[in-house]
Length: 140
Image 1 (cartoon, rainbow, N blue to C red):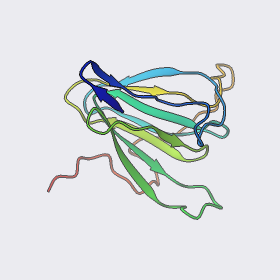
Image 2 (tube, rainbow, N blue to C red):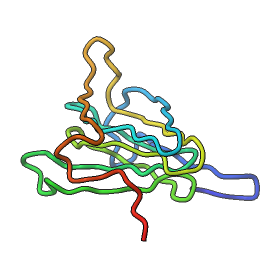
Image 3 (cartoon, helix red, strand yellow):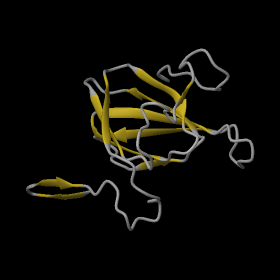
Image 4 (cartoon, rainbow, N blue to C red):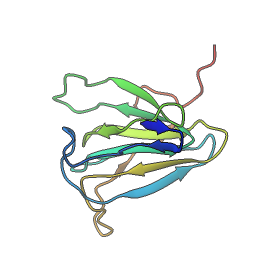
């Protein structure tokens, strides 16, 4: 993030970044306050998330059989108060919840083009599953 007296500039993803693999497409998705969008994963696609408005809690669950981090859950609080790029490898289960008072906007630059006839998207119910995570707010 580069702020100055005129505003801010943030490079979302560059082709010379170490984590850049290839370009598929760029799309925007939103969530209203309290809405959970997840879980899902991709066989081939790597996602690159940036929240450009509001705040989202993005959660990753690694269920890859050969992964040294198998069984681990990671939370990322992204958006207005914590701008960042989050790269999500293929096969890592992920989802997000809008935690701001208004609609949050997420930009994704995945490595693959969405195939309408054969989508690389495998969905899991957000609340009824074997993932060791609850989307509830953690007060206290």
